[in-house]
Length: 483
Image (cartoon, rainbow, N blue to C red; front, side, top):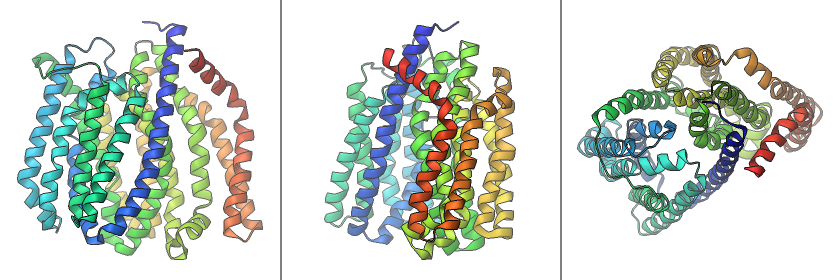
């Protein structure tokens, strides 16, 4: 099937609008979360936050596999969904309910294993979120499939307002960690109400054995990959804590959180639409191939300068913003920022392969990722502390996982050379930015001025290098305006 130019223009218009809404949503949610966390930190004792954190770890692990990955199959499906959606509803509800029951029964064991027995009741309460997640899997998938990120924005806004009100009132009444648990439930319930209200299609639970088999064949590897991703992104904390102690872990945690900002700011909005967008064009091989390269190039255009600024200005940035006592975190930040930039590309590759139905290949890649990462993290910690851990992360991502993705891309005509051409100008611009920042840091003593002057001049240098890419950006904007 060949996609017409008119169809492509309409699709790009929908995708652009969805990304815009998603970016606004992501920014507002992050800023709001910072504000409410500061307020709640003044109302709730630190040890109560620790109890909630234990429960949240358990919930996040279970949520990563809660709907067995079958909602992604609904997102990538291009035909009528009337026959598939009831089976997806049944599978999502059944898996969410079963996992909630496991959490309720296993909460005492989980909490004792994590040396926080008081977290058992909170785990049991928060298991309700698993049932809600199962119930909203289909409406959420339909929003993503139809590029209705504006609806997602309304749901998330309602969740924030309701959750904040519940958390503040209960915290003032002295409920401690339970305030945070009820906040999570209030958020999920209010978002669910808005999602159901805004989604026109209604699907009751149903069952089709053949479809269930196909859905699980596609979804279970994705669910397994989600669990492995959770391991990849958290096993370093275990290694650092066990081998280096709590103080280096604090420095490493700050560096990792800072380095993750570009991923959250740029990758998250794009990923909210990329699976559906790639799925819409996968039946046109030429457009399918071209869409990935174009998306990667445009994503790199905004990701590279953000990552370079964080890396090149790591030391003065941490000293000025967080204080001198946090300066050791800079040793890991520059390398972790590089990891963040690579993650942006790899996550886009994940969605491309998922849209092509290659969920088993995704699972294998993440098995390799975790298997290669653990021993190298331990070696890095032994040789060079938190900087060695960060270096191990980068080595595995660049030298093992990136080639694995490129090999998997070959059947679709995507070649490393073609992607390199797409990334050349952002890469050269990033190199020039580093040179400018280093020159500024050599000539200016004030760390605040290093950040301000180095940031401004390096961004100007980057803009000059990537200026020829303006034609591609303008073309996308025109197509969006005409769609």
